Image: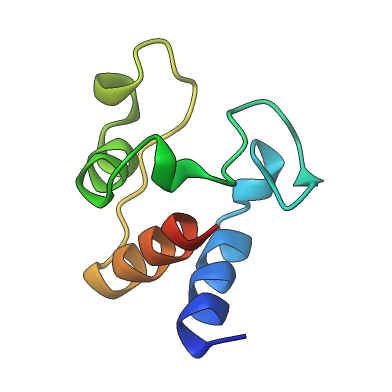
Length: 82
């Protein structure tokens, strides 16, 4: 796998995103599945949602994530490639 994908997957794993989301058939379907998210959302939306989930998805139980800029790039690139 490309290094960028590996790094993004590591951010995903380290933040336990699979405890609420399904990627490639693995995880818990509490939140929406993330495969194909690039068809529904863009990078700017994803970044905003990580910072303020309830603003972008009213009623969401997802907590805010304050990724450093490099990790934000990693995880958004990873998700947009799924």
